[in-house]
Amino acid sequence: MRLHYLMACAVLAGCASGGASVPGAGPREVTTRVETAEGPVDFRMVPSDPSAAFTIEAPPDSTWRVLALVYDQLKLHVTTLDTENRRLGVENARILRRLGGTRLSKYLSCGERLGQPVAETDEIRLTLLTQVVPDGPNRSTLHTLVNATAKQTGSGGAPIQCATTGILEQEIVKLVRSRTAQ
Image 1 (cartoon, rainbow, N blue to C red):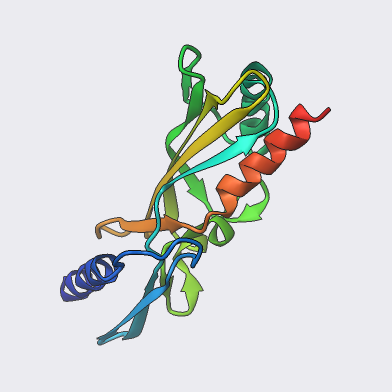
Image 2: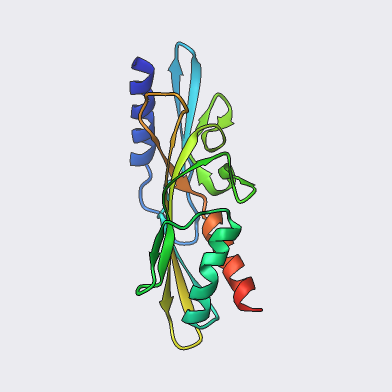
């Protein structure tokens, strides 16, 4: 019980120390080490804005049509589909270790436990939503929201909030651009 309390305090301390970011400087990693009876535990948190926006040089309708194919390519089963607002995604999806063949630690920073990225050892609950916003007749903006938590399998402890590395959002944009260019 005491270990869970110490881990929660460390995670909160890491989140609270994020501060303001400098444009273009990229996320700043914060590491907190907690000494426990089982040994030291390092928590690495990357404060980040969970939403990202990218411009696509393609009409909104074309961008919207390929978005579901991109989620399918990432092996994500769409659970949210709002055609009126051109928004789709997955909410509270349970994911283990990989997303679309890629290690989750490439996309999410959830800290480390005993030298291993938590994103590769724990069950991840992922909400990933993307919206296509018209930006003229032949241009779209993709807004992507990433929210994830990690929970140790079989543990009664509280989930750990994960931060996006920004790479998943960029991967979605890259795949949409390649499909709309065809």
